[in-house]
Length: 226
Length: 226
DNA sequence: TTAATTTGTAATAAATCTGTAACAAATTAA
DNA sequence: TTAATTTGTTACAGATTTATTACAAATTAA
Image (cartoon, rainbow over the protein chains, first blue to last red):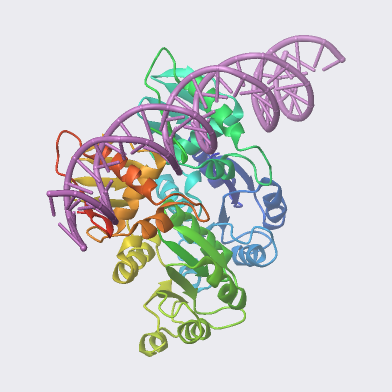
């Protein structure tokens, strides 16, 4: 899955700009223009990262930040703080507010994107890249599409996640246990043999007109993407 | 198998970050968020290295460190200490706490990895690398592939483990008993002569187009990788 | 709701691996 | 030298692992 980003920021123009561009990058974006609503909506949305304005009409960014770090179930949510130029820059830097990074307005979108990716990479590397590729295989997380040789392939949800997992580390052999842990939802119990069947289904789907086999069986170890 | 690393650290976000990345590097990782549990679990896990937070809810890192150095069977366990910035940095440096290295938060994962590898290389070189090499032989643990002269060789599971074992200590002669203990699953009983047959099979596989024999028979002692 | 799709499991077939026995060859000891 | 010991080699039956198929239950879409 691709990343979800929540924005708490009172200037609609900034929200619009950032939201639009982030969505173009494949992120799912939601936002709020004040702190109290923001804290509430945050929980429903379960973002992978929060963009937080320093100056808000009700709460300060620091308050929100502390609130998140202390009370909520989002204790470890990565946060990037947005500040107006000169606005307590040093304070933030020095402060142990639990912010992961900060950016001074006005900023370019590319600047922001770079920071976001850097922070996400640190916390949750899976989230970052939208398109995974290996040889003539291409998977787009945002669009949930898979191509082989530029021909689109239809996969069921489980096959998609399975392929996504293999693509995150091509060539590496994964045991059935590892596959189970990473591809199936937590706390679900499926027979380890079930994986074989899904591998079979995935193979069938991605091997269009006798192209090269891309999934390797390693006896007594597991499977890998070639 | 590659190295095992145990983490004692009370911040879940750090554990998550480090664990995830170390696992991607091929380490087996376990962790604990407090000192007392950590000391207990440590013994079961038998790590090759310990990442230890300086400040913990119950015991201090120093306490744990001393405990390990004095009482336990892990007297020589390599330890890397993690400290918050400014947090007694000098004290640690100067202190004869028995720490092998230390790192100041916030740190980048690559920084940490470099330290870990350096320490492990010093103590236990076997553990570090994913790829084992000897002369024109190359074995990749992640990918479960073996090459001779860059030509891939197909091995059965037992032959793979056997070669992996020999590669962990080239030139050293292992008795059949030692081989049995290290290459076969525990509590399994096989005839000692069975090893000869697997040696034969391994030899056959890795000696492609009359290359040099790589497995040496040492009469009445065992076998070695040349 | 009904229809279509997806999912997990069981059953069976196919492929591969494993351990052992039997005998040959090499080495050592007497 | 011969006898004893150790290792090499082969073949093969049984065991293990994986592939494939079919099907019922669950989920999703229409």
